[in-house]
Length: 432
Ligand SMILES: [Zn+2]
Image (cartoon, rainbow, N blue to C red):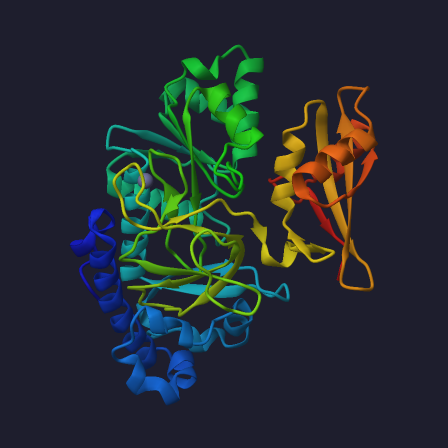
C-alpha cells in the first residue's frame, strides 16, 4: 500500500491535478480489488483488461456495491488473510443481521490520517483538548476513528463517551476541553444543562463543536435551528462531519463551514439518481463512495443510502476539492407526493422556520397510486398558531400540502425521545 502522507496537500491543487492523482489511485485500487478480494475478482472477471487503465469517467460503467452484497458475501469481501485483521466492527445490515467490517493495521493508520486531515481542516491543533461524547466501544468505528485522528493531530483526548450530563459537566469544569465531539441535539442539551447548573457555556474553554449523526445545515447550507442554537449557547463554531464504517473516509467542514470537503486521495464520490445515473454537481441524489487505499475490505462504488449533493466550486478556504452538502435524508425515506420528491429534512427545516412550534414528528403512509400521505404532528407554544396556518406556511415552502395535527407537548415527547435511541426520532415510516 502507498505512503499515506504523499498526497496530504492535494486538496489545494487544481482540479486537473486532483483528477490525475485520483485516477492513478483508482487504477491501483481496482487492480488491488480484482487481485485480492474474492468478491470483486468474481464480479469484474470479464472486464479485467479494461480496468487496468480505467479513467474516472469510466468508473460509472462498473457495478455498484450495496449493503446487501456485503451482507450476503461478507467473507468474500475480505481481501487479506485473517492474521492481518486487527479490528472488526459491526454495521447494521438490511435484514437486521449485522455485517462485519474488518480492518488491517494499515487501515487503522489510514483512518487516523483521514480524521487528522478532517480535524486539521476545521482548525484543530496539538494545543486542543477534545472531549469525546460518543462511544469508543460497542463495535462502532466512529469513536475509535476520532480518537486515532486526535492522536495524530497531537491533541489530547478525553474519552468520556456515552456518559451522563453530570459527568461531562464535571470534566468540562476540571479539564477545560476546547473541542467537543458529539451529536448536535446532545451537545445542545449539555450546554443547557451547564446553564441550569450555574455554568455559562460561553465562558468555558470550548471553541469548537464537531457534530456527527444529525445535520447542522439545510439545503442552502444555511444553519438549521439546532446549529444556530448550538453555536449561540456555546459561543463556538459548529462543524459537520460525515463518514461510515464501510466508506472509512470523512467529509468534514473546513473553517468556512460550507459543506464537507472530500479527501481526494482517499475516495471518489458520485451522486446518483434513482436509476443509477451519475448526476452533475448541485443535483440531489444518493451518495456513492469508492474509498481508496483500503487493505482489509476494499469497496467499489458503495451505495451509502444517504442523500445529498456535491459542490464543485473552489471553497473560500482555498481548497479545490469537492464538497458534500448536508445529509438531507436516507434514500429509503424519500417521499413522493404527486410526482414531487421530498425528504424529511426539508420538512424539519420548514417547520423550524415557523415561530411558535414547540416539537414535532412526521408520519408517512402510502396511497395506492404510489403517492405518499404525510401527516405532521406538532405541539405549539403559541396558542394562536392553528393547524391551517402551519399547513399554509408549509405549502408555500415545500410545494406540497401535508396534513397537520396539533397535539400536546407530552404526547410528542413520548414519541420523539425514546430510550431506544440517543437521537430524537422524528420520522415514522408506515409504508412497508
Ligand atoms: Zn473549505
